[in-house]
Length: 436
Image (cartoon, rainbow, N blue to C red):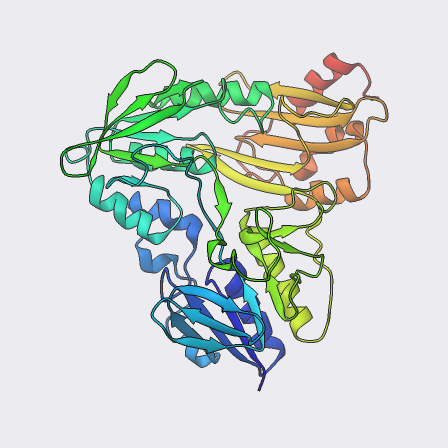
């Protein structure tokens, strides 16, 4: 019986296992060093905030795996012998495979800061990070202040978590406006104000110089690069992005770049070895997308795709139009298609921006300044339907069509306020191009 081994029990690896089982009787083993059972990584913050218990983050009951004949093995893979098709574990044991799927995800970036490995320094990605946070920041008596380094989506989540326990937070962001490498100026500036309104000490244009230790090897303070200011703290959250977790294959014959290089079929340079999820790197971006995408839904799609290939239906990975969603404290964010920030915006891309007077709702629509083709939309504080924008992008609708059909995309419940009329009026005034 063909043995499929999957390294990693995140959304990518587990989706692959589930779909291989649906389509075949192959032997399946999932290897993980983090936890015995699959859990929803994006739900970790809600455990700390008291909205759920850790067991609630596990989508499947513990009996699910045995019932579906999916073997679970805990352990760290030390090396892969791709010629003999054997995994070697740090404990000395081995596991033979016929086909191997690498789905090891990401790890937080570290940039060689002095003190970055001290007790009390953590990311916010793994279950162990949650355990470390409970240990070092259970309340505002044990943790007098936390410092977060890096202004992405994980950073804002960690700030919200600590804020929920009334722990003072200083937020170091190297950019001069929050996430402005991704967000257009109006949105980025609105989020700056929103963070400060939650009594978070946002330090824009500030970098970490070093983390200072106390006499017991624990975090005592940090030093800011630009000013030399020392900020006493008990916890440092490193949220300056993530890197594919592939150190254990660096000495193998599998081709790597920043991640594990794969083709459109998610095949690596070595026969019978595949890579999916955050650790996989496409040779070229698909439809303008990044070559590495650390996003939940693309990991799930890769798992479904590789399962088809392994079960005899070799199909290319096709993630479709870009979309994503997140929260900035209590403001929901959605993006569909391409809306570039201030840096790297193509010459042809023009933006229409509308913001509500309460400073917690806005949209930005990107379109081609010559053809008027709709390119993408960001929404803050207003929920829109994915299906609507996915269809309009596929149909190559123009911006006039999208603006006039926004009510069809509205997703908020019946009694929520609607803003489409205000948006249409503002667009008409700005462009004078919309026909009645």
